[in-house]
Image (cartoon, rainbow, N blue to C red; front, side):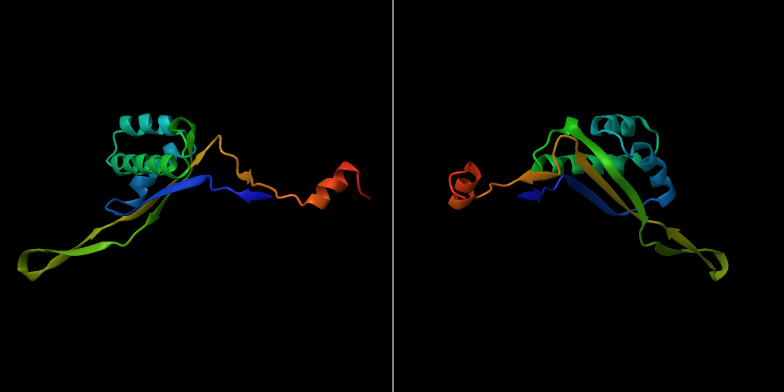
Length: 141
């Protein structure tokens, strides 16, 4: 009997104080790449969004080694997405009793990793009945 094996792990970062557009600029560069190549790219890119994404990729790899028991060299990023989070709204006080709104956008980042060498299905122990085994050998009709 074939059972579906879990081959994907993910890391989720919520309420990261950063614009969605700035995070997507970095996420588009690492989508579909291997784990080691992603770390090198994130260390060398000059954007502020690289540090929280680096932490999420590192966390997803740690989840993969713990849950799946896989090696970091066989991991690659299957899905990386950035969604808009809630906007933090403040008021900046100005002269003559006026105020201007300040909007601080947040985002949610999801990194999904998969192991190349894990099969999607695993075979469980099949329990044969004695009659089926005898019939297959041709002893009993």
